[in-house]
Length: 373
Ligand SMILES: *Cc1c(COP(=O)(O)O)cnc(C)c1O
Image 1 (cartoon, rainbow, N blue to C red):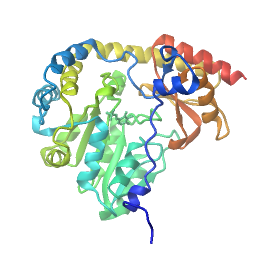
Image 2 (cartoon, rainbow, N blue to C red):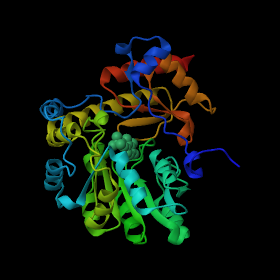
Image 3 (cartoon, rainbow, N blue to C red):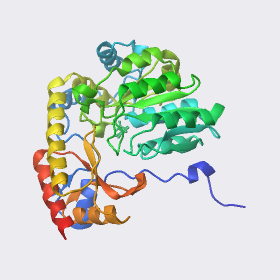
């Protein structure tokens, strides 16, 4: 008899490995924390907006009380701006929470959850946690999601297919799907299958790339649109995201979420941040400039990288499957934290989050130096 505790499908989960915290890297390599540059978790290099900080200080006076379980004020602001009723909104403890809620609401042991290879690491985790089988679909040659192939996979799963995760843009590839591709997919998807459209990086899309995902939510009752305050809104440490879906699905998500899944500071900060269009615009411009800065350097170094619609770039740093780990270690020793992506099937690559100009320069200089050796 096995002495192992717990469920088999839970034992099989490989825990999520995030970007290394600055304090940990400082301790391990004997570095000065203040000199470390972290370009590893797609955080906003501007930090949090002052407006959100100020709103949080006010909200801090009430921390002796439970948060508003229904997030009335924040849902009101989201609902007015996005043009959907408040009972179409679910708040999450980060959009991670939304992804998990969706999996728990619609799939269980023996079901299939479909997503692309090289897609966001939380999709297999959320699938395994409910005992569903992860159906990983081969991407296009460009590493972007192959939606027609994903549709085929859904159809061959038949009644077992319960959920599809689609990320636009995707992390870590930065790949972007044209709205026409997504719409064709939504139209062809069997109505018993739920699709989560994960738009954690939506705010970084160039004007020509933008599209109206809310209009799809209005047309497709089996769609959940997931957005985050962690990236462009600068609130990664607070853990807050939201979902937009029609009432039937929203009701399911709200039944299984923890009653107080979003704390009061996060709710207050999100309201301020969501309304701070100057901060969003500045972040967008910093990101554009940083993208050009990094990719120009990669071009000069004759390195392969994937065009990115997000706030990060995936760059190939060598040809052997230790290359990513090797260059990552050399960067860490110089106090620069980036993201190895071997777990995403990219052992020869690194993912670089776009930072402030001076952070990008420090990274480029160290990187050039390391690769020249
Ligand atoms: C960062 C990220 C998220 C979730 O971030 P939260 O901090 O939980 O809101 C979701 N999807 C993708 C693709 C991401 O990269």
